[in-house]
Length: 491
Image 1 (cartoon, rainbow, N blue to C red):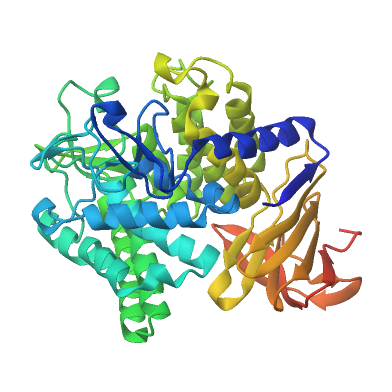
Image 2 (cartoon, one colour):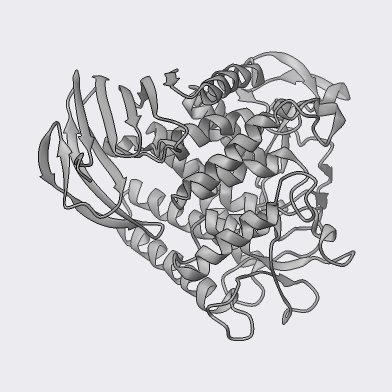
């Protein structure tokens, strides 16, 4: 595990707290322990960690996929893989390829709290697609070829093809909800009734479409990794078509293509679209990058931030702390650093307050919090992205003004051991302590003609990342070498 340093005492304390807290969620592989909180016979545990309520002997799909970055950072490679495989093995044909929502630590039995019969168990469409996306991201982070095995690829195919075909009754390529959570639910928002009339259900929802879009890109990546370039191109095209359909038709209300996005379609009246702030249903649309960058998306990001207001207790805002873990992630993606840091500090400052479920104790006892403090710091604030199979890493400093520097010392990525430092938003360092040469792309916000590579002016390349103008260079970092890339000091 890497060592983290920063000048900001709040961030340092929180990161250290999170890494220690994550260790407490890990279950010993091979342990004979309780299943269904002791109401079923004890069983042998697979390598896993708590993902969901700490009082339950299970891991939930939504919590799992939103915890794996922090878990991988902590070296929980085996736990992440075996949990993913458990979900894959639960997606039976007789279940229409829905993966079980919550699985006991034995990796086999559904948890009794969310599984009642083979016809009645919790099913939420976004989780299906997030499992595929998460598996691909873990393949990139680790290079673990088990994720591209025939067994796992069959699981991805069942979701991307068979599952979609079963639940897409109107032919637009989007699987539909058929009822409540135990029947097949269109969204992650389990509290629609808090904003809409009692009994309102969704037919299609924006968070599921966003997750499907990323899953399509992930499936394309899996095809490429397995050597099928024709399928790779086909699925990239399908993803682009879905994004176009979402932005130009599905999310448009009354023909106003510049207006606020629709986030859902009513289950009973397919001509009725819902808009406005709707917690996860809204948030995962821009988070999954299915919304097109530009003024319309900018306004929606403002709407989401305003919708959460001052946090728990604000009318219409999320009532549980885990709902807030999406917000730093979202706003770092769009380089809205102040907003990302605001919500990150909100999570840190409310760790010790009571969770909405008294059995959890304080908010910090919800496992997703600690996993995401790590993810928000490394993936969000430091902009670290990894492609181990191709020997690549990229960074994009998004340090808030209150944080002058951050350092990850001896971060193990694949077969490399690296140190990464950002000083402000204009200076980045990468040291390759051990392993093969690695290709480093250093991104910086802004349109710069040159970037300095070890004090040598180097022509910068330019792109946009989620609508933000970015300058970058790509360099090869050899073993035992440190390279510095920075924006020229006179900028």
